[in-house]
Amino acid sequence: MKIVSVVGARPQFIKHAALSKKLKLHNSILIHTGQHYDDYMSKIFFNELKIPFPDYSLNVGSGTHAYQTAEIMKGVEEVLVNENPDLVIVYGDTNSTLASALAAVKLRKKMAHVEAGLRMSDKKIPEEVNRVITDYCSDYLFCPTLTAVENLKRENITRGVFLTGDVMADALTEAKSIAEKSGILDDLGLTSKNYLLFTLHRVSNTDIVDNFISIIDAIIKIGESGENIVFPVHPRTRKVLRETGLSERLEKVIKVIDPVGYFTFLKLLNHASKVLTDSGGIQKESYILKVPCITLMNETPWPETVNDGWNVLVGTDTNLIISCAFNFSPENKYSNYFYQGACDTIVSIIESR
View: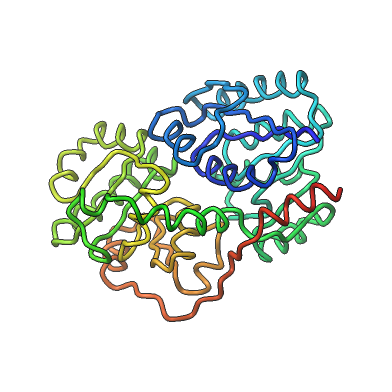
């Protein structure tokens, strides 16, 4: 069986690393769209996760949603015509996901969506549009949770839907022991459970200036109170920090560092007392690791984490962010929504069909 997998952003590299190990008996071809192209956001993941370098690199880079989507569609279409695969696998909800799905369905190629069925019911969020359209294009919809299956059922999507468990849970379980070898805590002068981890990258929080200033103002005030905060800063976020003149103020009170590799980040996450983030993947990873999560959004694709009390949605409200940074504490409830074994299940389904 010839399988083409498409990746373009760091969460997809991690998911692909876990699944590709189980697909190694098949003729597997990898396309890297180049949506994440900085070495900190791309190359380091291929090296750390021991993913073979891509068979095709599209080098699309940054740009508007329309530009990225169009350029990726053109590149993926050319590869699919040349390779004529039996199946195309896409991951998550990025522009790479959407563009590859559209290219595949237009060429009438069978397609599988890993992490299907997630919903946030807000079409203003680009990732929501991407994941909904991708699901409607897919022949195989691999859902990480029962909630995702039910979301699709409400939209009358039942054919080709499978509850598989979560691929990221497989990847994280395998990576935890490796991550513990990282010396990042010593390098930054940190001790376990004595610092907050902060990440910020979502367009709605970086490109809407009022939202950005509200969040950064909260982080500065938390830092000024004496709390240790570590901030691996996304390249786009660093640019906005400079443009808004907030970079110098922020760096005086918290540790602002370059993006780090997967294992180093897991070490930081696992030993944080709390994480403040607008990343969907980190919300899920923090839940699996039992690290309280403060989400800088009004909705989440992972409502299970909120229902269990390990995640709280604060949006961009400065006072609420500050309050939760000091006071949010989950109860002991833990339902283990993101169970392991997804990669084996997915491969078994693909092979049987």
